[in-house]
Length: 217
Image (tube, rainbow, N blue to C red; front, side, top):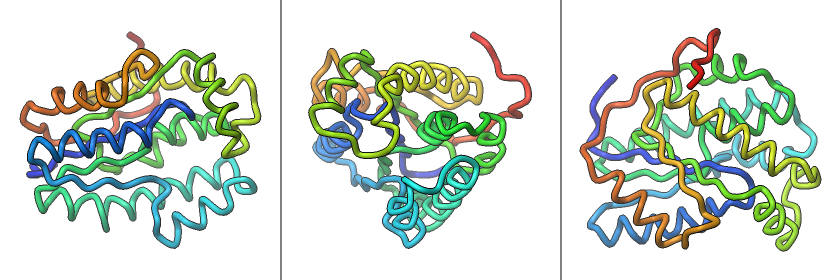
């Protein structure tokens, strides 16, 4: 583990919860506070990331989980770490929590996913956005489905439940986690809450714990 001058923030949560909107609001809030901010997203804009995005409908299960994690390792090496070492605040729209949830929805066991991500850099602050499943379903219906999961009417409730479980998994790993309900707060309010939480000095990130015995609250 090595100390970094920059902060690493990840934004995850169910589809339709407002991750992209929150990323933009947080970028503006942190920039206004004098930070140099680098926003990014997963899957990335690399060749591998574009391949994943264009084949998301046909590649599934363990194969997709492996591709998504490979993209993440490249993401850390070529984008996240260099920006952190330069002192930037890095915000990524989706990271490990999204993988743990979406790939479980795709039938991949959590232990397999934990093992794949064993050596991935953990964030200084993992933000989990949530909302009422009914509200999430309304937002998805209003904008139209973006992927195959959006066609499952049970997906919003299942995602909210899985993100709640993954929050505890990350906390057990020593990762600072902030859960924010976007159904009762504006994007600006959410951004201010995240920025205030991040105001404490950054703590070097560790690795995920052995996945064989998940810790219960």
